[in-house]
Length: 250
Image 1 (cartoon, helix red, strand yellow):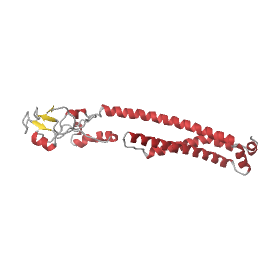
Image 2 (cartoon, one colour):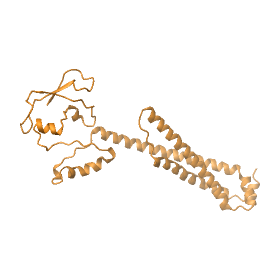
Image 3 (cartoon, helix red, strand yellow):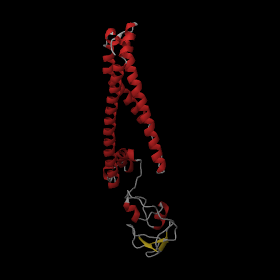
Image 4 (tube, rainbow, N blue to C red):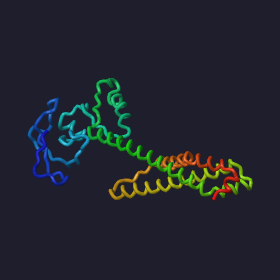
């Protein structure tokens, strides 16, 4: 078949393009004479991932059998699936299409655009993961520094508690709990700001906002772990102060 434009295509109505029958089928039987014009019902939107379809004419199954001599055995199948399930679909497609001879089915590779998209997503994912790790390290150092300064400024408080009977384990737990609370609050605030920024950006571009719960929980959990690690040294340092040394501090 040959697509013959009647005028510049500016809409998707059926009067803009007609199809002229110029070749016969493999069986050589046509109910429509060669050279006849067949009006289209519409024009599909461009398909970037399958450019061959942009130059093809799609005919219904019954119409193909009754007018074009189609024998009911297609030679090419176009399958559309969710992108995350692409590899699984490729694995089961040969046996699904031809259970008797799955080796006769050749599955084409994904389009170059899809491969480029995946490579870009992988690169951005690695970059964002690295930035998150650096941010977590900087935040942990900040929490540790804050807690060390807190120990130095509260030595008289520590000495007073020790003099009133508090043992070293209680002092360690106090400062470790403060470090965990500080880091967890910071992680929760960061997760909230990141979620709000994501929703605002997607809403601005009219995209659906998708924020996985595991990402928010993972961010807060990572901040909690950083708080535990950052609070170990200040807590041990505070617990090692003797009551007399702490009370004598200026």
